[in-house]
Length: 107
Image (cartoon, rainbow, N blue to C red; front, top):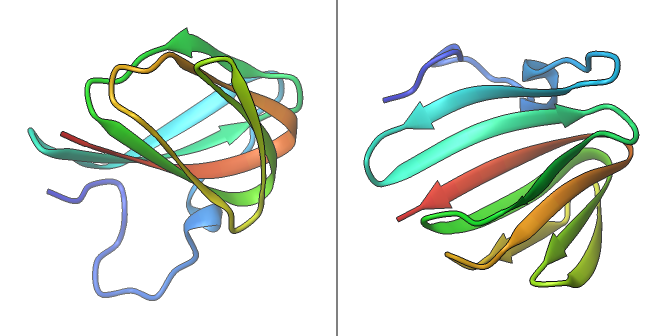
């Protein structure tokens, strides 16, 4: 079930993914038919364009500041803050500055 991450090891999630210039980087940690957990890093100004998810999506900012647009409503999240984006509702993500986030999608 878990992949790309060490088991039985104390770790910090934000250290499990690196920034890359002018890119959005993702690293999947869990994926099955019910849930997925992915880490993302965004360079400043990078984005994931508007889309919808087949499940509720919970994001937690691990470092930096991200802008989330959910059904045309804007949310600015700082380190440690969490937002739930409902299933089938259009949303997008933008790097106000370099930032890292954890995404958990459950069906």
